[in-house]
Image 1 (cartoon, rainbow, N blue to C red):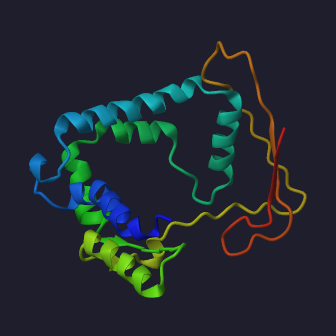
Image 2: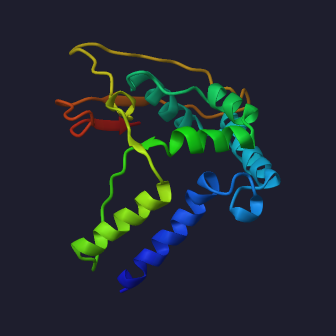
Length: 193
């Protein structure tokens, strides 16, 4: 057991994940990101999205399936790449302080040798690290709803890989079996060929 170290681990995670955006007023010594670190992270993420043009065909199939079957769709890779490339450190910090941590849902699950009072204290430490926040409005809560195709409807989508030198191809079939309950495809079955 390391259950007695969980509070220290949680505090360390919170310090690295939340505090740089919520405190310090732009002072790198007070925990804020430095501009050069932000630019390195931005370049790494941008490069990763640009490299999707070189990914394997099965990865392209998975991405396109999600684009087609998610209600409301998902942002295209081009939209995400544009957002990454045009973002500034000030934009990210402003979003984190005014939007990301001002309204959120906080769900927790504590497992191990921790009693209920210790679990409540862990939750309280997360709330303290987040500062004052309002519950996320239900209309803004993320959902993972899947398009339900009527019986007998077939959806066929063909796409050309963006890399003309890619010698491989892929075919993916998705079958929905039974009801989808609670917004989650709990009883759906996916078969990739």
